Every structure is written in structure tokens, then in C-alpha cells.
Length: 300
Image (cartoon, rainbow, N blue to C red; front, side):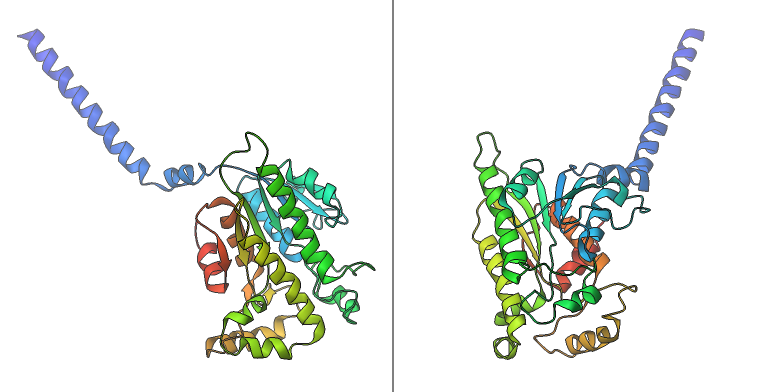
């Protein structure tokens, strides 16, 4: 009888122990710790960021590092714009000319995702090149060959060519290469009411700017080797970018009342977070307007 009692007590103990383990497991699975572990399962990538020293590019680099990705930033200067930043200090800063196909090829061959954030608002032929020191995130002046076609179209075509060539390698895998391109809202004018009219009235420098963006978009949409995310922000800002702060309410009001060819402004943090989602999430593809960027940026 004593043995039976001991056995029964032991079985009750094991049952209680099992119940406690199951209960603890349920609590753990629903806890923030488990959620953090699940998000940590996102495959980490080697990401190349062209234009990484710029206003948008540096924000993208920072967020990619925060998410655990290995980042190589390519720019003419190749210098960390904020040496005291704990995340940017983990980026591999490379000096290189993205208009040179061989330079781009070497970078692409050592990564498995890419962001193109090379930007130039006023090119050398616009007559307004000096304003870049004010409106450019990096405060740089364009060189003698810095046209919209060279800086936007040629650099991005070099990236696309390098990716497509890499994808044709034996054992290159079947998955599409994730590539994020920072375009602009105005590139979509032909697709919205009154947009084509506004497009025709635009000054010559803006028409050339948009022609370069649209050429890239068309090339991306025709590539079968690339999973491209095309971001079309209007004004990009943060509270430190004083040159655009006065006009932000005008853009936002026009968008809110339904002016079809004016999009709501986008904070640089929102754009950068949306780009990171474009790198990580295989379902993100195609044109992303401001509402799409806001939704992407809200994801964990």
C-alpha cells in the first residue's frame, strides 16, 4: 500500500509538473520575448546602398543595421556622414563612382540585396546647380558630368545590368534579387487626373529629371530577374531639414483636399522603414506611393 501511495503521489507530481510547463510555454509564446524571437528569424542580408551618405541613403543604412543586416554604402566620398552614430559606424563605407559599370559590378557581386538612393535635384545643366548645397542631404555640388541621365538613369542601369548578369550565373538561385529604387511622386503624373497637363507645363529641368526616373522605372518593370520596389515620395523631410519645412503644410493640404497631382509629404524615417520592408518582405513589389510607404513603415 505504501508503494501504491508513493507511485500515485509521484504521478500526481509529474502531472502537475507537466501542466506547469505547458502553462509556462503558453505564456512565453504569447509574450513580447517570443515575438522578438520570431522577428529575429528574418533572414539577414548583405545589402548594398548606393548613395548611402545622402539624406535618404544614410537613414536607410541606419535602419538596415538596426535590423541586423550587413550594409555596404557606396558614394563618391565613401565617408560616414555621422561618425558618432552607433549604427552608421557599423556600415562598410566605400568610395566609388556608380556611373562606372565595373565598380557597380564588384559591389553587386558581393551582396544579395540593393538600394538605389542616388539623388540629384538640380543637375549641372539645370542652371540651378548651386542650390544643391541647400537642398541636398549631403550638401554636395554636382560635377561637370552630373546630369540627370548620368546620375539617375546610368547609375541605376549599371545596377540592373550587374544584378541580371549575376542572376545568370550557374547556381545563382531561382529567387528574384530585391532592389529598391527611390523615384518620386511626380514620375506618376501621367497616371493621375490632370497629371499629363501639369507634366507638359513643367520647366525643362524638371522634365529631364522625371524622364530619367521614368526610364529607370520602365527598365525595372521589364526585368524578370529582379523583385523591384519603386518608391514615389513627394517632399521628403525631417524636422532638421529647414529648406522644405515651410512648404510641407501646402503639399499636405493639397493632397488632403484631393488635388490629384500632389501627394502627401513623407518623413525620411517613414521612407527608410518602408525600404527596409522592401528588402525583407518578398511580397513587396512594384510602385509604392505615400499611403503604401506609411503602411509598410508601420509593420514590426
